[in-house]
Image (cartoon, rainbow, N blue to C red; front, top):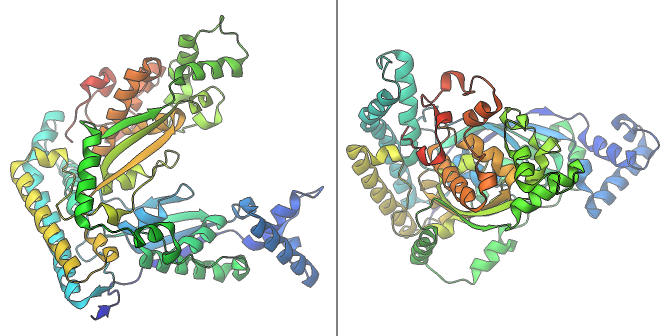
Length: 521
């Protein structure tokens, strides 16, 4: 069988900002811990003796695991021609980064911008035809959605002349947002990606992880080459990549016999466990309200008889009293009262499309155990359908047929000898991610409040609504203060209630309770 190398242009990586002398800086910070004065980077390599001492210290602290010294150095990369799949599975699958990435919600995708992995010749032809089909489906869906989008938009903004260019632009973006569900994970993206030195060293060690090792390794190697231009010494103690054969996931599946039909059975069982929810609470600290109230009294030095549980919780959760909650700066981790929200804790089992999860995982303080994606790929079509497609008959029928055809081609590629790694790139944005997500009230609060806004991505909005309504039933004293940002701003007396300006959704959400939350656009 002939295996062809990737035909796509390779990902492009450029270092655009970096620390000066990151290696010397790391050693300077280490020496400062044991010095009566600040040690500066320029002192570290001033002569041969100093450099020998530098290298010995660097090696010693690295081997001992004292890696905070490597967090000071920061590298900002501009990355282009990288697949959405690689970003989700590697660059954004941990909390230690910052990215600003082109949005498929608001930027149209060009038909030539996609990744081609290594494939057998027969599979390559099928792969390229499938990509072409999905790109045409993306364009066709936008046209089929036009009547429904205009109808729903007119319901919300009846006074607007929909023929005006600015409203046409707004509706076009909504059609793009929904049509993107058929786009493949192979679609290219570009972004700024900023990480610390220790994260880059971890990338080197783990660049052959599941699920897209070839592309990940290519990107990481280019990151390393860019940083070497600035400071080649920085990688003196870097560890070699852990071969994929040595990863625990690979070792587990090496002796685990099950075909793609097993994935179909797993999916059926998982979805049944959710019931009617898109995100279901499966665990929580049962004494959350009591512990939270105790923490408030203890941090304030107040007796229980002088501040009961209701008043203590209200002091933290009510925006009329805790004005920090109505700010856009998100200072809750930095304020004493707000940190009382760190004690309640929740775990949710959820199902969300790949495209929505790519946004959801950006809430890095609410971590999730996201899956080995290849293990969730079954023989049968498996996808999320956006609400707007459901109410548009022509679009709904076309969308379902497109998914049927896509899975036929995916199964065909596998039968032609394509690896599961390569086939994953054909999965659509609509492919469901099934996993568990946990976090404290402090971190969920920021996520819930902002994602209950009607301008939030539809699925994350629905997940958040499901989650908050369940929390309200279990912990009503906490839950009664969980609403969209405009409601919190109204409670705090902050105007305008909606902070979105021209992006206002058109619905006075601040007048509604959660049972009245409903949206299509």
